[in-house]
Image 1 (cartoon, rainbow, N blue to C red):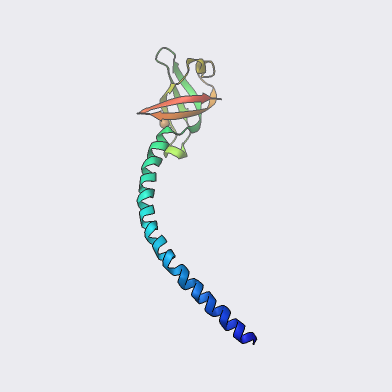
Image 2 (cartoon, protein in one colour):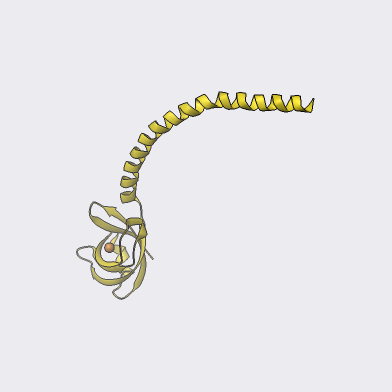
Length: 123
Ligand SMILES: [Cu+2]
């Protein structure tokens, strides 16, 4: 009797698997469409990466209030695959210059706008 129930259970398991198999295959095909979607998302990621904020710690090397830029010796930035370097950043708000004093160590958040790195937060 127990054996009988076991066989029925096994049979029903197979039946369930068989029933699942088809939609699973179709899901596989949807998965291929999904990959196209992922390509699209990669494209968006590229765009998002430019819109997203990046963070780094840096030493203020020089400021140009008139131009609205600051020269920072920043640490490596993993989110952009950038090594540590000294480069020019634009400031979003001139009020930030109160914190961007030559010789100061600052934590900045910035965005890539075109080929400019624009600081949006200074700490
Ligand atoms: Cu840099």
